[in-house]
Length: 352
Image (cartoon, rainbow, N blue to C red; front, side, top):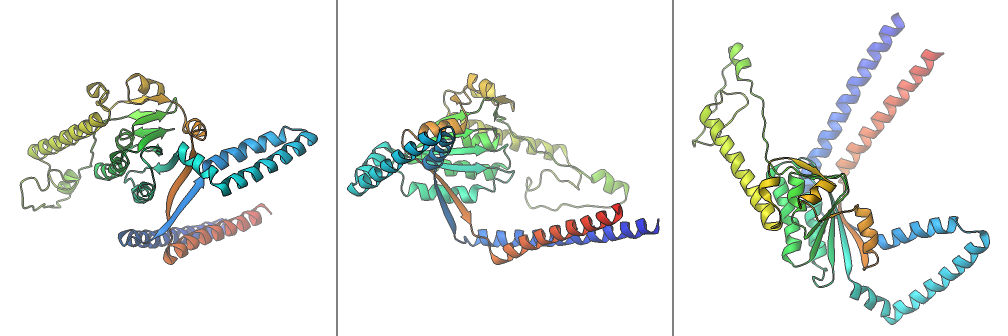
């Protein structure tokens, strides 16, 4: 019994240490990341050729299905083809062929409530616009987001509007979800493609907040909100909310909803906005029926087909981690590893 008590106290101390270390590391990483973003520190632009990736996958399975003799003959033929390609590239014919076909630039956006991926999105878009040809090239965004803050997703959608304003074809591929702010981004595209059970729509606005006024009043705690301007603070979580404040807050929500509907209508004029702007969501096939999307297809299927039309290039911007960030992440990982190692030792001792 005494051993179990000491063991429990030891685990409590370890847990406290782990929580403190993880919180400290998280704070360090968060502060340095915020400072880095504010000062616009340089990152690294990552380029990947999807044509080569898909070709290697195809060739890998082809070679495994062949007999030994067939594989040797196939590999010999591939060597001849590579030599011919190198020779053609030196003569410039290969470059001319790729230019005539055009390029498909692929961007990924994985949205959270604050649309944090916007920083990398804006730099990827800037890089693409510096080289893209409106006559031959296309941009594809693989978009995943359930929405979030209005101003954050408004900025993210504006980044995609930059592509459209330059006359470059923009296609949005949604495999899982593009709802609310996510759909605000998707509707900018000339064409929206979604998988059969992807979630689309949710063209609405929501706001919610708790109110602790009665709890404070019960405990004789006063909370005052002083403002200069009638509508500076309409709703509060600690003070007493008034009917006038609620009315103004609802008016602001309705106005935001109207702006949202107008934004979608301008970019998808064939959409019956009244029928789809009640906050409901539609799955892929149902979304096609109400014109929220243009085609039911996965992003993989679309990009594999695009490889026949031209060179498919993935573009991503990765910010370089600062030294404090690296130390914070390393510390967090080391602490976690050490704790699990200690716990495994005590577990083995207990079993013995």
